[in-house]
Length: 477
Ligand SMILES: Nc1ncnc2c1ncn2[C@@H]1O[C@H](COP(=O)(O)OP(=O)(O)OP(=O)(O)O)[C@@H](O)[C@H]1O
Ligand SMILES: [Mg+2]
Ligand SMILES: [Mg+2]
Image (cartoon, rainbow, N blue to C red; front, side, top):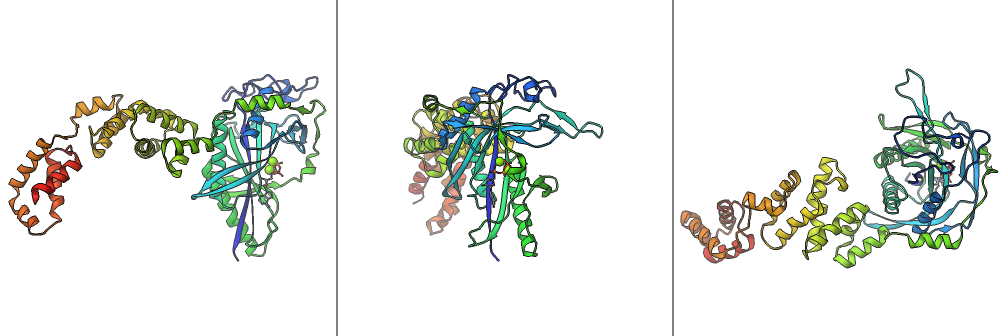
């Protein structure tokens, strides 16, 4: 039987506020355990939560960026469950009236554009963290994270493969960073994903039963966990079994998912409006104020790159994948003084990205600053150096703090464009190779490459290739 996969993602983006969502405690990462949780975060008697305005602003910003409905009236609810890292016994979240609903995100995947529905995005608080290591067999609880603001972004079950799910997640990751509402640091857990996966016979309309894989904190894990889960479910169904609705965890070391617990139904959580918090009312003035603050969004930037720089779709998508990369590219174009934007794109996406990948560095940490890369591109564009030697200069740019001009000077890489000088070299080579000349003239065209090679060797690759070709053709006749 042919199976179709159905995936919906719940993504938790930690909002980049300085303080918690309902208290003044700090949200900074990496503090001593239990030094940043206050009485409100712990839900001690006699204290009341106060909503963080900045968190609301960020949620609204997100809602506007995905073309969603921003509710003028939404409600905080208590989601009740027991877990050691949740001392209050409930999490403050939003339930039937979330702040953001019915938005969408366009993704491009394998060259195809697709719109993914976003059901809702709601504000909630994070729980603490259980630390299972280094406690001599005990589990420690760090409550610093309790009360950290989260935006839970829930997609429609619109995704059809692990790769597509990753494309969606990456696009969302880029968007929250463009908006500066989340630092996107996945290792620190600032952006993590629960993947809901089911399969159904192709052609069947009704969805299969979903399993939910919790807390995936890298793109690679999302892809692998989903693919493992698809195979597991298909095998189970083909063997006559049934998928049960449950929560699973992904074990990266074993590359498998394992059952954690059967999934609660929503009504097990006994959601009810939090009596300590007023409903959240957002005025249209507030929304308009946030709208004015919106930066250029990834899709807008992509379209502008195409029209302003004449880039193709692919280049524009790659270069706007993160705000930092897009900024870097634009700095290169600006500083390369009228050099071809496509040439700049090739260098940023080619040699530079390749070297960064190899070194495991992000563009922000590039040892080659935009201005120095632009300096190299200027010298390619004005024919000072050949494209081939430019690669050599690039390596030196990477390793030293020198400018391209200084490197070209020091290494004597200037291209030879003086016709007289090139002619002289060609004459010498022809004189030294009478046999090859005779064969070439007798029709052995392949030997043309031999003469090019000799001339390049004699000039250490510095002869301008076009001029060399033209002059050689003339002289060899
Ligand atoms: N049959 C299905 N197969 C795959 N995904 C599904 C299926 N049905 C629903 N989903 C997806 O599962 C997710 C459900 O998330 P939602 O937050 O609404 O509920 P939940 O997981 O029950 O709640 P909680 O926040 O407590 O985990 C959505 O992304 C939705 O698209
Ligand atoms: Mg959810
Ligand atoms: Mg869920």
